Amino acid sequence: GAGVSQSPRYKVAKRGQDVALRCDPISGHVSLFWYQQALGQGPEFLTYFQNEAQLDKSGLPSDRFFAERPEGSVSTLKIQRTQQEDSAVYLCASSLGDRGTGEQFFGPGTRLTVL
Amino acid sequence: AQSVSQHNHHVILSEAASLELGCNYSYGGTVNLFWYVQYPGQHLQLLLKYFSGDPLVKGIKGFEAEFIKSKFSFNLRKPSVQWSDTAEYFCAVTAIAYGNNRLAFGKGNQVVVIP
Image: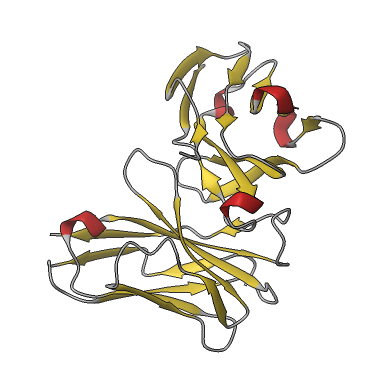
């Protein structure tokens, strides 16, 4: 596709449920990032993939958060046993290369609401 | 702590007024600097970036930003705003000290331009 796509766009979960959020990056982009954006805040880094390798997961807030990119393209962010504090917009971004000077292209985000 | 600071979270101004949004960062060493914009209902998109060379950077839609290394600043400016500039603006940094690839964002500036 022309840009980064994410699904679902909106997700409502009951506390304790597991959720899976999908990201389709721009074709051929090596780097893929997940960010979490709480209301009224800027996005905060969660994790980074270079192709299928997860090179940095230091931003994941707990072991309930898990991300994968098994074939180096589509990525899934999974949150187990969701809590109310997990409510946020989850943004996926991809970039062509693996250097910090590259533009990151963002998807529309998935708005997660945990009741 | 390492951070990106944006002040005056909400800015309201009239068309044709000048806009300046401040951004200060606290990362040492080499940094790459970005301004992203999010128009209502749209994705985050890159406005402009700086990684070397002329510290005065020109971006899309008449925006420019100046990197002042001694002040750890990267302020965004536009001489004459239009109603269509209503958006949220985020300053972001990549830095070797922060992992080099991932973006560290400020909290954003919500800008409303009154026709």
